[in-house]
Amino acid sequence: MKPFKLLSLSVVVVIVTLALSYEKIISSILLPQYVSWAYDVDAKGLEVGVPLKEREILLATEIGIQNPEKVRIIYVDEVPFPYENYALKILGEALGFVGEGIVNDAQVFGYSIYVRSGYKLDKPRLAHELVHVLQIERSDLGTIITQHFSDLAQYGYQNAPLEVEAFKANQKYSGEY
Ligand SMILES: [Zn+2]
Image 1: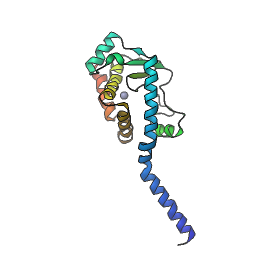
Image 2: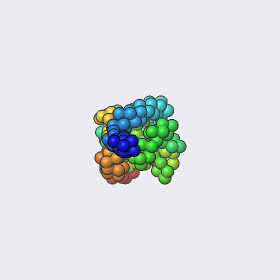
Image 3: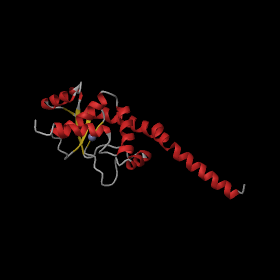
Image 4: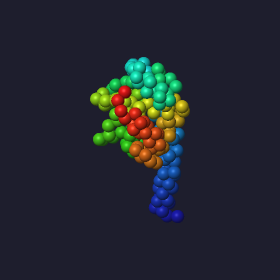
């Protein structure tokens, strides 16, 4: 085989191999990094966050949370994301999770709910986030993150099953307390 053809063939083989292992790279290397970071964020949030008020505890209980007293709300200028990890930043942008023009109003990392200051966490909005707390409580953070990232890639944010379940709570608890 001529050297040029051999080179072209090698390039094709490398590209195909990369494409096939793309998902594997994400699931085996990138996701565990994000999950480990998220556990840290949750732990820090539980230290500094504020507990739910009585009426909010009632709401959490109604939604089905087993340990509503463990929930903490943390108000921040920006909901955390591991921007310092370049590969995760690229992944986050690819999934529409972060990036220009994308504002993350709130995110649940376990019993910690990080909320962007200025985002009014009224009853329907809190109910939505509490459903995410419930999803993690009945499973675990790593499993839910893995599912959510895979869902985002497959369905997009609005139609991701975990979001669909949470958006139902916005409707159900749409009124005041
Ligand atoms: Zn949500």
